[in-house]
Image (cartoon, rainbow, N blue to C red; front, side, top):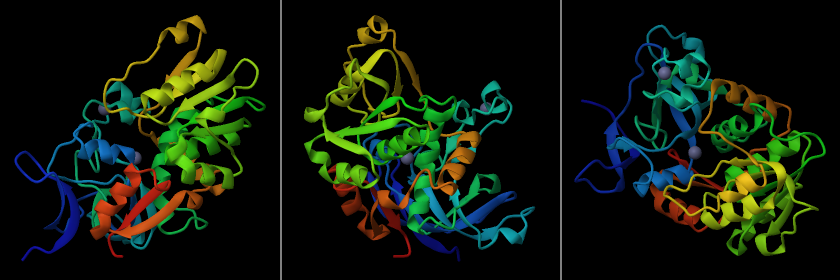
Length: 338
Ligand SMILES: [Zn+2]
Ligand SMILES: [Zn+2]
């Protein structure tokens, strides 16, 4: 008899949209480890996947911001790995031979398959990944907060390779969700004076920004310093936020698009030309950005725990999704064992 476990599955064609199901317990293959999941974060991308606004191959167990304890290993993996407390790089499969893979950008590989969208992810009691996807969690990080390494690695990729801010720069982050509060901390670590801006519905998130020592404002109260901010990062993925962000950059300044909209939005793009803006972005993470994330946390330059709003059992996933959509906190994590 196959052992089963509970998992949150996005259904395939003709199936229910997203639901809790019993699925087979995964067994680690050669080179793989299995985790007992201790926490998986709900991310904007998960909402886009549920809403069919982000590519996925259903039926698939969702969840890509995963932390847990290694509880089984496949052939060729030392049993020393068992008991390691880790967070997970999301690429389950990349080709390993295209220019992107060989150049350190597996995030851009055409055959990339990621957990939570293409292959089974972490909204489950267990998940299986290649051993090299597992990164040790710093002992200072709380159990469920380890799930925040993954979004931090994404933000570090967008902001650190190369560094977008220099010491003394003014920086603005639009959108005080988890990505925004991680981006703000990374920009502060680069020496920038950081302002975080949100809307009236972001009161809890702006309070979290304030508690992190960042300047937190509602967009109506935002006044750009002098001619504008040296660096502006959009983490809202919303047309109004992008509009605020683009108009807040100084001439010749740097604009970074981190938020995903999930659909076409109207943007007054002429400002990029008229103000000679440098526009960069970052999609997902790279092995290098994971090292940066580990060092930023280890050096206490980025704090993950203050971003954790609540840890809910997997069975309460709908409540956690509703609270995420409502902006009723920063980061909600589902814990299968809870
Ligand atoms: Zn995510
Ligand atoms: Zn490749």
